[in-house]
Each structure stands twice: as structure tokens, then as C-alpha cells.
Length: 318
Image (cartoon, rainbow, N blue to C red):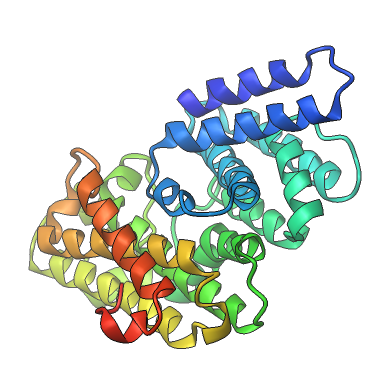
């Protein structure tokens, strides 16, 4: 994959014979930014309006999450994936506790930690969530699924609010709910893609409630029961978006603009998924918003967040 090749290139950059700490820092920033740019993620749009130093730090967080996620989704044997993630656990310890990480992305994480105070505990939660994907392919209850979402998405938000410059303690609850909303949206979008990897994130208790079986999901069987289950999942995602909006602390509103942009874009994606109905059960091109719609929603979120009385002048971003 492209991100993997970029990561390898980053290792080569870091091994150059240079005595300049500034050069090494620039290399790590370049590696993190390259992973972000080449991922073509919805998140990249949200970073554009951030100050340069904070944008570089957020690139480090995103690149870290992208790289360990790509390890999990690769076709390598499970043992090899476990070993690669174990290396990343060592890299995190080095990055956050004064060691000498080797990966340029880990070097960039260390700089983000030193400058903006991102927490080791949150970075480790993301890694633990990805490690669980190596062995856990089914979820019995909604509670289990929300715990997974907390690890792989809410914890990312908790890393990010430090980079956004948030000061109000309430921003942590905002990050938790918005992370849950984004991950539930991802799960809804990727039902067929995950099923192809023999992963079903829809909880077993939900399948039973709606009269469905694992084979229905794995085979992409469409129908009324499946449609109602997907609508239920969409409603849960909407609830998390609403909770995020409800707990957003006013003092941090402007600082949370990048998060609001992400929320707006993903909510637009959720609306598009809802319009497609049970089509998400079948394999096809991954659903995404057009660049124009992303920009429109990003500008709407920026205006709502930054302008005086913007929250009253514009419709909610989600």
C-alpha cells in the first residue's frame, strides 16, 4: 500500500547521516505529512486551516493511526502483524518517555507530545484497539462495540483536542461522543468491506433483535430486516453526533473547528449512506463525498464555528 511504502521511505530518511536535529525533525514531519496527503482521507480537509505547527502535529497523529490500521488490514500473516504492532508499542514508549524512536512518524509523535502534551495513554488505546482487530471479529453487544469505538476513534479525538489547543475539560466528553459518531459512520459505510474480511461489527444482539444471521451479513443479503438494522445503527450514530454537539464547551468552540469540520463531513457521509439504504451490504466502490461537497461542508462548519453568532446564524453542521 502507498502508506506502507511511504513509511519505509521515512525510515530511510531517518537513517541519513545527518548531525542536525532540525533536519531530522523536518524528515519526520515530511513523512507524517506524506502519509496524510496520500491517504486522501476526509480528515485531511479538516487540517488545512490549522496553524502550521499544530497541523504538523496532527499529521503525526493521523499518520500513526493510519499506519497501524494498515498493518491490521494487510494480507500479512497474523503473527507478522502482531510483531509489527509490538514494534509500534516500543516506538510509542520511546516517543513518549524520552527514548529514541526509529520511525519518522514516531519521532513526529514525540515532538507533538513535547510541544502540545498529547498523552501516551490515548495513543496506546488506539494501538490496543487495532491489536484487538487481529483476533476479535464479532461483537456480542452494543456495549462491546462502543468500547471498541472508544479505543480506535474516541482516543484519537482525545489526542487531537490537545493539538487543537482546547482548555475546557468538557472537550474530552465532546471528543468521546464525536469519535463514537465517526466510527459508527465508518462501520455503517464499510459493512460489505468488513464482511469480505470475515469481520462483523454489527453486534450479535442486534442481529438477533432484527431476525438476522451472520450469514445474512456475510453474503450481503438485502431485505427489510437488514434495512431496519442499518437504520438503527444510523440512528445510534446520529445520537452520538447530537451528544457531541450538546456537550461542546463554548470556550473551546473556535479551537474545535477542525473537529467540527470532520463532524460535518462525516455527517454528510452518513446522510448519503442513509439515502442508499441497504446497498451498503453489497460490495462496490467505497462511498465518499465529492471534493466539492467536502469543501462546502468544511466552509459551513468553519463559518458556524468562527463567525460571531455563527451557531445562531447557520444551521447546525450535524
